[in-house]
Length: 74
Image (cartoon, rainbow, N blue to C red; front, side):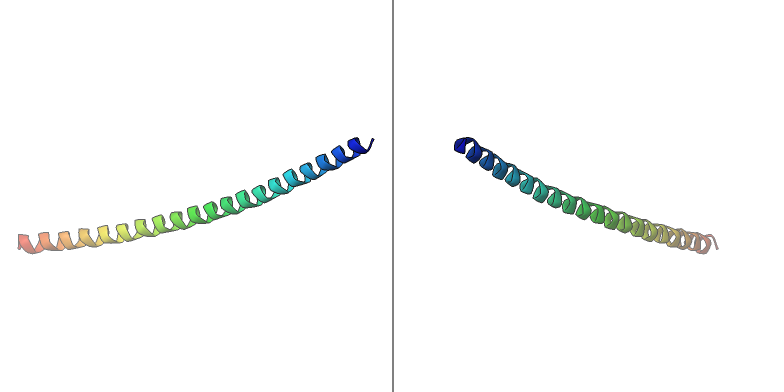
């Protein structure tokens, strides 16, 4: 009976270790996911800003080209 009790105690300890490892892994994965979500949001914001800058540059170039064409036609 003592051997069985000792074996059950070792089993309980092993299960506790496994559960603790799973909890640590779950915490790490959640943190990694949160980091990825923040990185994606930052990348989307940077992409939107780059598009805005590109649109502004495009408009300014169009204006400059129109002015040059007007000057060259005169």
